[in-house]
Length: 122
Image 1 (cartoon, rainbow, N blue to C red):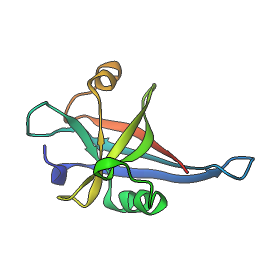
Image 2 (cartoon, rainbow, N blue to C red):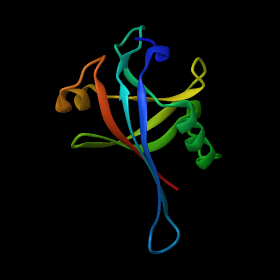
Image 3 (cartoon, rainbow, N blue to C red):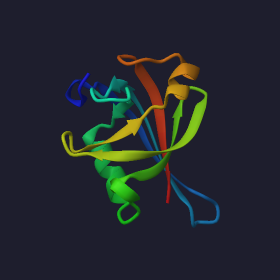
Image 4 (cartoon, helix red, strand yellow):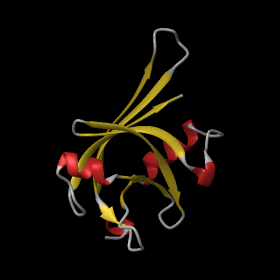
């Protein structure tokens, strides 16, 4: 499945500020289809909606890691893990890799629609 065939639905965009006033948490809830990269390794990804990716990129300007990756926390079902979003030139969006252990724990495979949350701490 290519990123152009990815289906998604943005369910929410919430900004929370901690009581200290210093930490800002951006939380995005969405549903997206898991797809397999056609190269070696069988990497599985979710392509984020472009408008959603634009908001994350703007919020995290100057915080990119090597290869332009952005550190986030992802949640699918009961599984929560620290990961990175990666820029995708072809779609202009961001890609979320979905590890095999997450897919196994949540009973997901390529073609399934996953309900997921992306959290960004600033």
